[in-house]
Length: 133
Length: 217
View 1 (tube, each protein chain N blue to C red):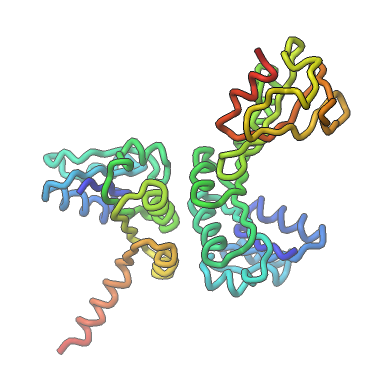
View 2: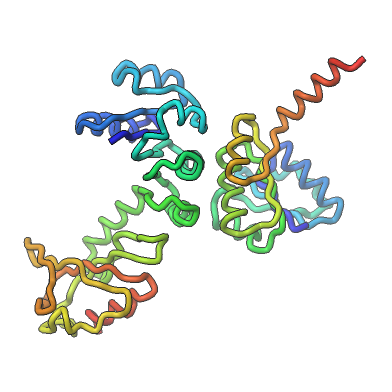
């Protein structure tokens, strides 16, 4: 995969480190340079500083050649905007948004975007654990 | 008209006030509770407090809205709201405020053609004062394929003394109006050009340079 990860928070850095170890080509974008400290140095993951919805930053990060993008910034509107840019303007084959607000999941699907809401999944797992014998 | 405004900041506030004064029906949607309470004190029930999603927009009457205006403080939110209104709820006209000038192109390409960028407006005003600019783009249309441009006719222009009908205009170009001093003229085939005229023209963006050569050597 040539993957761009938007947001180097907990989700973004985890994704980047995990997949870089599996030898995928990863570029991470984040507005805050301190966020890149979460990336494992020995993996040499490329970091681009700037807003993930800025088209110049996305181009610098290689969106024209990317075959995947994960938008896991801390703002759902920004994640959706980035996914729309990736999918509709750059035809990135695989685009996934990680959303905080479960209500946004439905909007993403209506736009034809793949979205995962970690909160919803997590809550279901907790419920399963509570109900289990 | 029935107009839905998203974002109760300064822009949303003044838009609501002005549109109501002009006799339009308005709904104003604001996410922040305190702000929406203050707005409700002034505007009453037309203010809706909530996060903008399709359900809330439906409740606010999006299906009968003529226009939706997205004027929150962030381009990202304005984009999502605009596309929700345009694609999912089929509001006939959607206008969005854009802060980052590079985002205007993004909005246009994603289907939101009516965008307002204060940066661009102010820059155009600044440049209109600068005599250096020969052709000034005023308004992009049709996703940037067409442009309305303003051309100042210099004293040494090859067009001086020629009639509008005999100008070698490039394809997909037409003259809209001629401003001479305080007067606005609508050029006919026999209208001639004088130095310091300002011509308003509609042209395909790819032919702008050719159009410029009609008026400049």
